Length: 121
Picture 1: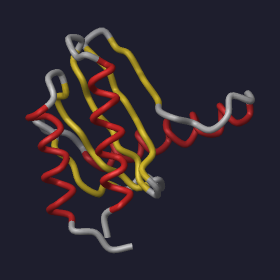
Picture 2 (picture 1 turned 60 degrees about the horizontal axis):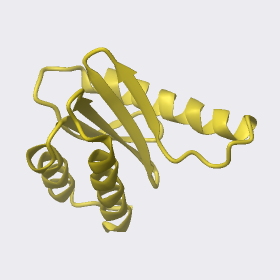
Picture 3 (picture 1 turned 30 degrees about the vertical axis):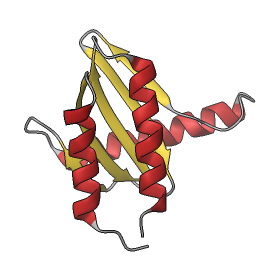
Picture 4 (picture 1 turned 60 degrees about the vertical axis):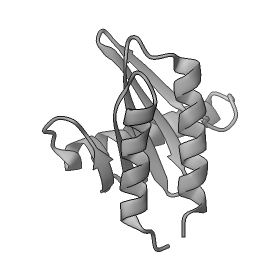
């Protein structure tokens, strides 16, 4: 599958600039490889990608094993904000949101972004 990575990068940057509370985003492969990120701080993208894929894959397996159906998304709440992971085909979209974020709105824009990523060729 071939993607225009500039379009994905633009999409990720728009998430933060157009949605209150979203601070950063990254798209990683489900194998844990970094694809594109829009991080406002210095970070090791390879470590973030590996952790993102691992958490998402374990969560997907957990909901199946515990008979909760298919995984929709992963929400991790920390003292300073949220990490939200959502599958996008063979990729995982990772979002960092601050504590002031309206999670309903964040989930809405994440779902829209995931659909756009899945439909990109």
